Length: 260
Image (tube, rainbow, N blue to C red; front, top):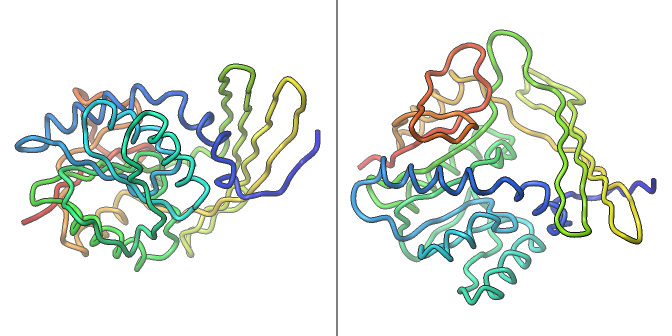
């Protein structure tokens, strides 16, 4: 199989298939969180690192006013094209999630699949939370999902899954290359094995994430002092089943409420 070394985010069609096939559970979970944790009507939503807009356009079709930003122009173009095809405003824009402003405050925001951990430095994480707080109305929530580093046992270091849409199939494999507790960086290799009726090939890339123990994330929230943690869930996306974080917990969705 031919292997192409390339930025995975530069291939939005394949990325959308890989990460968009299980959208329904996240979609329903977000609606339940808005209802449970936000006082008053929720109508304006914002997604930092929106990528291909796999959730954004569905929320727009459900009647919400949505916007999103992403650093990757190809992902943003894909997202806006999708919004346009569904007769919706093109509201995704290229931007840095550590330095942005919205023209109107959102009622809620979400970032559910680890994109937050792309921010490799503590200052970037702090700037992101402050920007998010400024983008939300008082009492608005930020639904933030990430993999924590457990303080007991070893973190999950390998994962594979497949997705299919029509004649397109993508098999995905992700595995840890290096973990540095001191620098708090975790390096992964990731491949897309792409199958179409006429060809097959592999796209390979490396991804670097910042690591967080539960205490390190709690310290970040306290230090920035713009959000409070309302409750937590896991990646089962069941809004009726909040969790208590213990030393072995890895998958967490934090419900952060803007202070003030």
